[in-house]
Structures are given as C-alpha cells and as structure tokens.
Image (cartoon, rainbow, N blue to C red; front, side, top):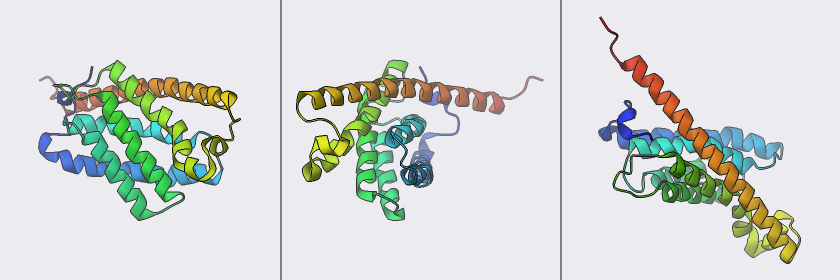
Length: 200
C-alpha cells in the first residue's frame, strides 16, 4: 500500500497546482502520442493512452487525498484537450472524463482516500480500460449502431464477442493498474532516498 506521506513533493497546499501540472501532462500525452496513434491508425490506442495516464491519476489521488480529485483531474484534462484542439475532440474529451471518474470509483472513497492498495489499483485500471472498449459503442451507437461502430456481428455472436473484448480490456487494465502503482512506488522511494539527509 502506498500513502500520501510517501509523496514528499505534494504537500496539501500544493494540491491544486499539482492537479494543474498533471492535467497539462495528460493533455500533452493525448495531443502528442494520441494524435500520432490516430494518424497511423494504431489499434487499441485508447487503451494504451489510458494505461499510460494511470500513474498520473494515481498521483492525483496521492497529491490531493480527497474524494473527487481524480475526477477533477480528468475534467480539467478534458477541458484543456478541448481548448487545444486535435482530432475527434468531443469523443476524446468525453472519454477522458468518464475514465477518470471510473478510476475515482475504483480507488474508492474510504476513510483513508490517500491510500492505494494493489486490488484498488487493479480495479481502477480494469474499469478505465474496459471503458475504452465500450466508449465507441456508447458514443457512436446512436449514429451508426453499436455493432457497426466496432464492426461486430449482429445478435448473440456480436454480444459474445463484445463481452470478450470488455473482459480482455478489464484484465489488461488490472495489470496496467498494478504496473502504475509499482512505478509510482519506485519513484517515490527514489525521491525519498534522494531527499533524506546523508548520515554524518
């Protein structure tokens, strides 16, 4: 388990500043790598971008250990993404907001919201990446129909395939959440080691 006390660069009074910096980093990730992946028509680009954003979302919870901090980060990032432009702005901005909200739900609203355990990290990552598979259906469904949006067969075969895709994304998201937590733990350990006074 990792706690806010292990994050020496994020005292409480810097919470809003930290969220702004994290939102800027997430927006840059979406605009640079995201637009590049769209240009080359890379598959599963939403899942990849969300997985890379998980460390930023977990850091937001540690930096501002209050319910709603991750959701606020997502909303801020979506707004910045909208203002800066790029391809498929409404779709991407909506996805960012909902994914951050799902991570917020996955991390939970306990009495110690600053604590992130491995199961919570896996659940948060799983929910976020599963939504990347569901988002095209929800966004384009009214225009093209969910099956056509993902080029899935109609009827039960399409539903079964879609359920398998969701399950695969959820499992991949769980692994991505654990990876993000390990990455954050390793970084905080190095920061603490560098900032601790050397023995005389």
